[in-house]
Image (cartoon, rainbow, N blue to C red):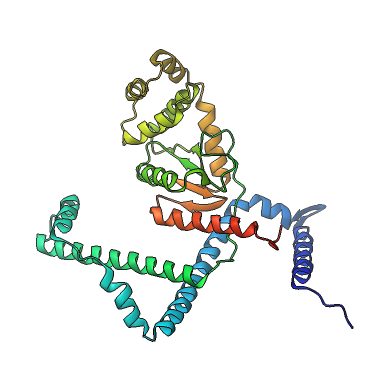
Length: 344
């Protein structure tokens, strides 16, 4: 009787064949110039940052479609289990469970945005606000309900995301080295989007605790003249063991980052003012942010903030839920990798 090939062995054979094919392809000539050959491996190395960005776009496109297919399937199963229709199910679990938008909420939102709508009647603006708040709540509740159904159905997303091997270098760290999830952040203390992201990262730390490790790296942008010295101020505070206190203080400053301000903040957080001023004025930490910025540009980063969650790129100041979804996925993948029979 012919010997049966197990699925695991077949996968290993196919995987080995794929690796061999990629290795052979990497040595394929992309061009020749006389006796000089430019291989596809050299080409890929030079274009690695751009190719990674393309892989991220491809993954995001595939994931959107996959999430749609998963949503359709879990809704189909739930409607069958309840002997109802999709419309009735969503009405009961989404529409009827969303709290009404109150006049107080509309007024509070209106006060925060009315300067942008000076040419429109107040009643029209408030009607628009009410509709947008309602749609936001409906969307959030629908996502929450789908998350419940996915958990009930035991959904596992196996589509592998593209990852970049990003170095933590000697960046300041919050969280244990053995944490299953590491976020490496490239940020700018004068960047308004970085300011917006800071509370999100703080909340992530509170929610995930020792399962999360955060590494901070500097990327002061040329359009932010105070950002380089702010980065040096944080490094000077680090010399006195208070990087994160200065980090938080600088983001709380919301752009007030002139040198005189930085020296005030040093005193606010209890640093030795004279030692801090000497460090800041010397410029001895300039090389630190320059090295971080060069590394970020090498990874293809052009704006701040930019985050790598276990090597997965998340650009910009995204909502807490965006980070949480990726972290939860990474934790699930880590757990699956420890199960008996998991591929090593």
